[in-house]
Length: 325
Ligand code: ATP
Image 1 (cartoon, rainbow, N blue to C red):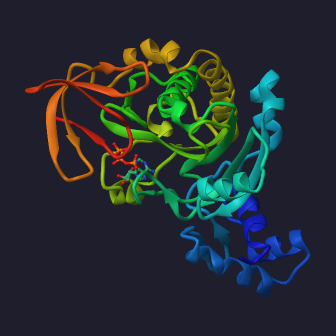
Image 2 (image 1 turned 45 degrees about the horizontal axis):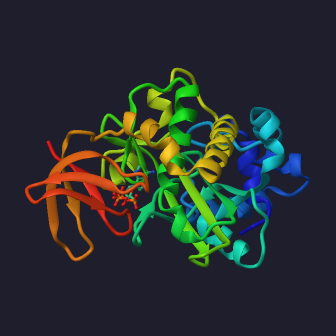
């Protein structure tokens, strides 16, 4: 990517027009160089208006992440994280999994302004353009083995819900095992990938995508109902504030998860279960579908469902849950 592309996009962050000449002057380059640098934006999926006589502007203001502001929001929890801010990455999880394998430290948080190949579970994608979604991954190292981390994605859901409550969001709920919904529309997703032995030590890369502001065409392109913070939070949540708030709650919840296990967070998770006592359908890896009534969560994070064959438990693995009308 052209090294001037993101610096110019930052200059255009307020969504106002800037002439090619003013941009060129700002960076001490020619207008042709500016034009060149902005040719990359289309391939990045970043829309830019270019109007003769007025210059360039982004369709909407974009809040770029400011490390200082994230640290202010993190407060006393700041030292637990090492922030790594990227302009663009294919996937923060992929990047951090690679870094973890070569020894990246506990607490590294990789965040990107633009994620071009965000991943969900089982090859699915997380879609977001510049400024649409807070996309980041955190590396957390555990003494225990990967086998003891089965409730981790649910614990992370609890941290996200605490952060959303602090941001004034009402009406959000958790969908087992790894999504945050608001009135049945997906607001955030969690993707956890593990490294290490079953007996320990192990490392978890905790990936989070939290929608900030989804433009209408993107919302329509997502193959399930989606929502953003902009539509439901009482005030605008910029990416630095959102990131700092989520990380602060994550630090507290992960600490509790490590010392007391998921069981200590289970009641809090269940109190926010979007489908508790609701009819649900489970999509099994072999293509089977099982219907029943969602009936709580086991101490290890498995979903309990009352089916015609009695109470059954489902480990997160490859199972997908769908609410039924
Ligand atoms: P499950 O985990 O129960 O199988 P899921 O279908 O939501 O649920 P995930 O792997 O958790 O699957 O997330 C990926 C899915 O999230 C995509 O297939 C798409 O439907 C949806 N999605 C992608 N981008 C966004 C976004 N920005 N906002 C909300 N939803 C999105």
